Image (tube, rainbow, N blue to C red; front, top):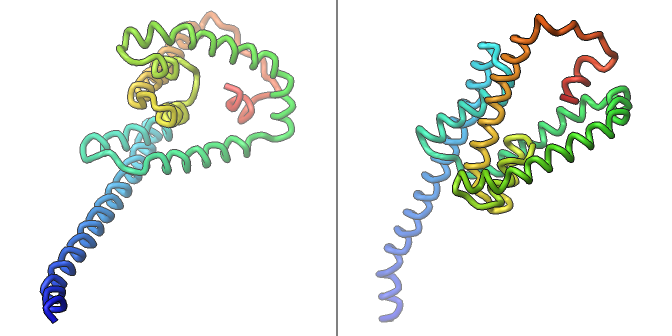
Amino acid sequence: LADRARHDRHRPATSRAGGGAVRSRGKAALKAGLLALAMVAAAIAGAFVFRALDLPLAYILGALAGSAVVANAVAPMKGGRILRRAGQLFVGTSVGVLLTPEVAAELARLLPAMLAVALASNAAGVALAVPVAWIAGTDRLTGLLSCLPAGMAEIASLARDLGANEQTVAIVHTLRVILVLTLVPLWLGLGAPALAPAAPCAFAGAGGVLLV
């Protein structure tokens, strides 16, 4: 009887503690859900704003800017790896849709040149990895991933999987994209009067964009 009485006295406290833990988990889940919705909404809004301004890579850079604002102004979203995997799934699907038989045949014809460019660009990235890591004060793996040619989202995801500094890799590749988007159009605009108009080719449109 004494043991039962002691058990009954402790039962309400245990129940209250369990209820408090459930409420705490519920609040955390609600906060994470609202943050995820805010992040996605900001990314969509940023993409449409960049599109309205007719900026290049609007849906990539606009979504990046919008989600970065929420991540820095509110809090970084947990579960970003799952979101990145889902985004890569959609990107892969969108590229696969463009691989028509004509595009595949043209890619096969250009395969030797593509392999040569890929090997040369990767060799340049490896050569720059050590000095970049020394200048940035980071490890060599982070320097290597920062210099290798790749997409921003994919290389950032790979950096996290390999244990490198994901933020440094993302910043370097973001700067690379910004420099390309600003300097290449300027260079083409300044050199446009001296350039002859390009002859039309069969590999125009979506296939050409895919190759670039």
